[in-house]
Length: 162
Image 1: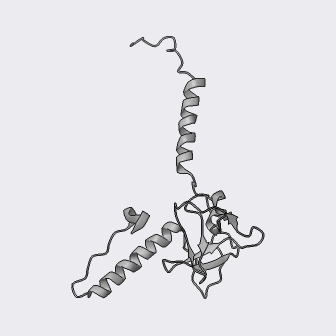
Image 2: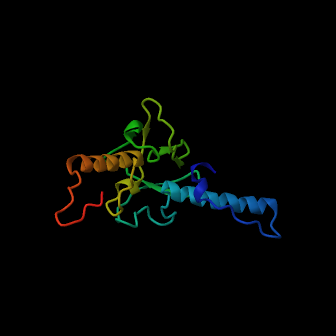
Image 3: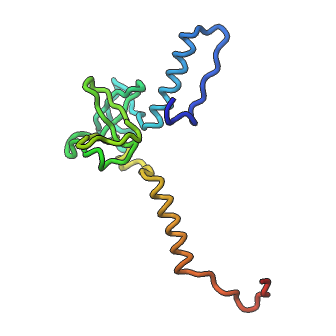
């Protein structure tokens, strides 16, 4: 199941269901979870490749999980050096035109990638691309608060309980 195991609940097997039917249903359910986790939530053809949040057109590709993803158009950005793009935001296109996300895999030297439109969409709150850095920033904020704003001595008129 990969990185989304915690959000995937395997469907219960129906009484009269064959192995092939059951495992087909499991595959479709896990594909849906993977697509949502990756942000591959674009409307499928024949709908136009337009973002429902901002109305801008983007490049639409099928994904390995049989979903569709909107990627930022090649104009004006073109492709990006993969090491400039945070993990889980790098999209690669196979020779057969299928987009896939290598998740946390380190890019090879000189690798290029594309980014999903959801990262650059003006109608969507940006995701926290570096959770570890956000946690470090909050911890530093807390430390700075303690360093530069020490607790006040007890105010007059309050009993000393220490």
